[in-house]
Length: 64
Image 1 (cartoon, rainbow, N blue to C red):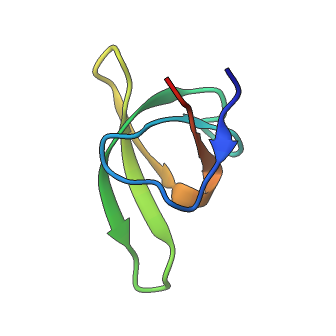
Image 2: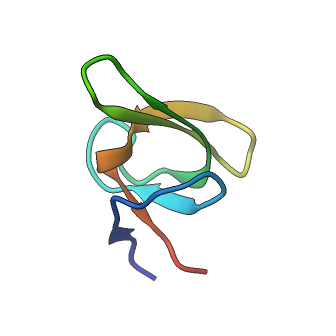
Image 3: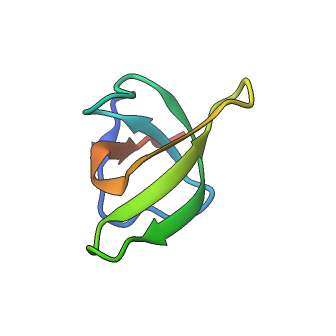
């Protein structure tokens, strides 16, 4: 099951980071924010409860 890059990410989606610092990590999207510069950031919660923030363009949605 490979992640599909998507610009339509929303809260509750299961995603995997496909590029960047957190590459290979996956979890559920819980918070979305648009910065002053226009970049969309998301908070991802992993199954073990750890959280990290990343850019929405760095993740792909995984279909379950």
